Length: 196
Image 1 (tube, rainbow, N blue to C red):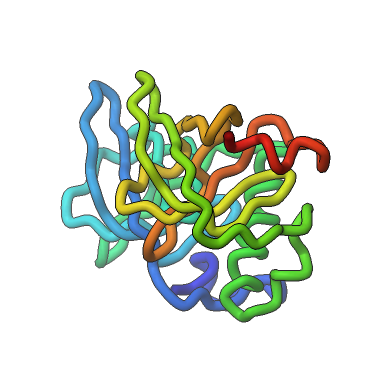
Image 2 (image 1 turned 120 degrees about the vertical axis):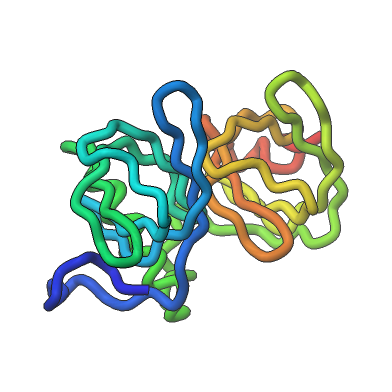
């Protein structure tokens, strides 16, 4: 996966090892599933034979990247570009996350987490979906800002969930589960009781 659409990527850009699954939500509730093979802070290339008209507004949920708003851009022989509507702090955070994904895939990101993660392998917990439906899962690890959960049910990236009594949102998927970010970071003293 190439980081960015530039023929000669900027020095801060680097190849990504794989594409990301994505969902496009169009006006009227129509949904298209596809793959993203290049992404930068301004745009992404979506592999899809069907191409909405240029300028069409849409919302994209990209696995491991999250939600972005944008508009259909120029065509490509494999699909089309989506130009993101990110500005200011949101664009800065988005670019930082893309760089982190690259470093993570190179094995360089573990020391860069905002909060130390505590191993909790095997702890049985549950998460709740909107509407209150509960799903059992297994806690992989937890930090003051989020948790990794092992579950065959993986809510879409960007979905709100509750993990124990903590409100959170899904930020990425991995092979046997997903990761969430807490909407309000925990205090260290609350760590043990947060998921009860």
